[in-house]
Image (cartoon, rainbow, N blue to C red):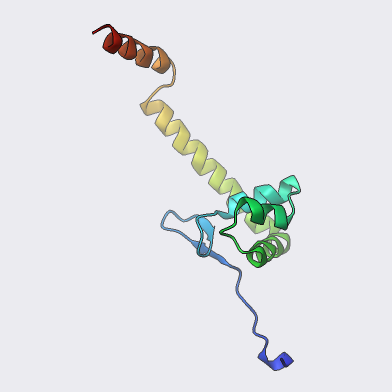
Length: 113
């Protein structure tokens, strides 16, 4: 193989329909890999947990993260805010207070019938 035949590869990330960054060909989001990286998990351990992500792709994503930490951290902060907003919206529509009691009451009513 000669040096002229080596071609650079793009970062193996793509956006899904919801706008999340995902590892190409998998259902694993960037968020998951970055969280594992921040915990200190090795690429090999992550590959064992997520075998659909090629080991080389994990290394490539980590390299991208290290080189673009500010942008990725801003993206992750935005995703965290979006998840918090979604959770708040669901809890406003379906308050968690009393939900367990209501469900247990329905169960009791069915068992008593």
